[in-house]
Image (cartoon, rainbow, N blue to C red; front, side, top):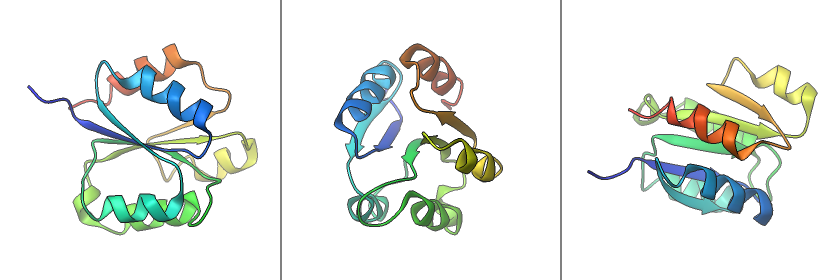
Length: 118
């Protein structure tokens, strides 16, 4: 059986690698490093899970989230927002499935994400 796709939209190579490793047992992971590339990729796929950083080069994470929320093809896509900004985390918590403040524990991420699998 194929694993569901998790898109990791994160510009930090360290966090991107850590998130990929944390999710690789339950998901097929694909890392994307900037907002423009993320929007392009979202035209071609419907991931089961998206880890989305708010502060990205190019298109912001907030604009990417608006795009995801406005398209019904992503109705079953679960979104975990990752940010180091506590204020933004509070503002955005109702718009996503889960908000995690950086630094993020990989074990905790793995456990939380595995609960979001179909």
